[in-house]
Length: 68
Image (cartoon, rainbow, N blue to C red):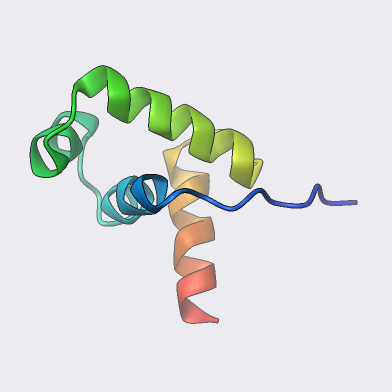
């Protein structure tokens, strides 16, 4: 049984969209004017909320929801 997903914050959605486009953490930090550590923290939260283990799974999740 799949755990109910916790909604992502607006910033987490922005980070996830950038991840899905293939940007590196450093590039995301520069584009969003946030620190690299903040990007890493957002990614950790995203992975937990989406119940995924890495950026590839998170990107796949993003793309599958976008297509639906």
